[in-house]
Length: 250
Length: 250
Image 1 (cartoon, rainbow over the protein chains, first blue to last red):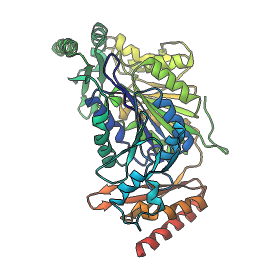
Image 2 (tube, rainbow over the protein chains, first blue to last red):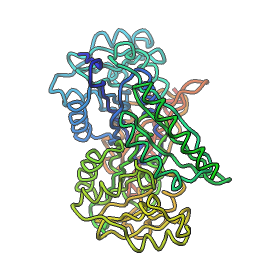
Image 3 (cartoon, rainbow over the protein chains, first blue to last red):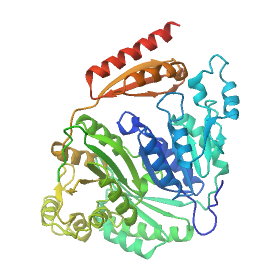
Image 4 (cartoon, chains in turn purple, red):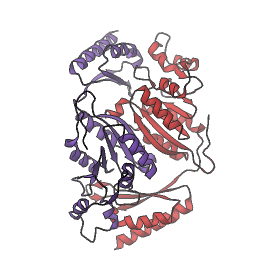
């Protein structure tokens, strides 16, 4: 069930955030960025993120669209004990496999709950699709799971992060993307855009982005260069620094 | 080019965030939540959000998938003066229309820039697909645009928010979703989940979600009820409060 990111094509990934609370504006999603940074560290390219509501058909469609397209799919949300937690059943449906109470998951829950506490709602957290491996977490006992190339995690950030730590060492990443951030400061984007485009064209192995920010004191812009090739990254960064120095002196 | 959300089916919407900086983990997206809250206020249901990289084929595919499915599609990012700003061209391609320098947009840019400052890079911000209406913003002069049911906005939050204020009054919303948030506090989800499921089944016009949070003092859970029907919302909320009172007394 593991995929390799070595060789020519880097491993890719998508994030699927499952939860009405994100789409209603109640909750600020912070899991996507956490996963993005985690994957960047191990050389997996996050290529897409989606947010869908707590509706089975929507989850099934998104899981199938994303798992067939990327090396890994990470989902967050919808694996708790309440009626709106339908991710495990939806993922089982997406894979066309059975789902039932998993004895390994029940054993984990028993480490935390007494027999009396382990009511039908809490046992719901032990519903795991057939063929999945459990993903333990240190923060709570309720496990996520890993089926095919899909890693199903909790929505609560601290629990999700613990699950990423569990699966992280098993992910097949690759060469890390190296990043160089250059402060353009108050030089407006419109002033360096043409020079930057020339540099981007001349350094095709380097991805160059320009990110404006407005502060109370005016522009505060950053140029971010990204590449898996250190030498090429360095050459492009040198060209960008020379461009900005010329503009600052003008 | 406007759609009505009145009648039986509420207006729906998707958000498409365009930008490598979100997928690399550099930047925390805050625009989706802002738009979600804005739309909730006017009774438009945000049904999906996606993040795609600064790549034309990805943007075109996502724009077409989302604009055909929802009443409105709001995009953020990729309309600045630098080479990585390719949203306008991608949206034109998605609609199969021409794109060129828009004289109305040039006129807006001239309010801010001198002829000398209005270089080819800044003129790039006046590239608008044929048939689109401009979306002005108070924060900068560079416009977004509205074509068909797609509203194209900046990625910088302050500029995006100004654009939402421009288009907001023209959006056809409907009855607002009413929200009741009930503090379950330290009562664990697993203790109220079964009772909550019964309530959810008995109140089908009300969407009920349970949102656990872990603090240094333990659980701090919230139950959120949402409905367009005030009486039904009130009845469901009363049932939830009674459930929690019973559990707290037990």
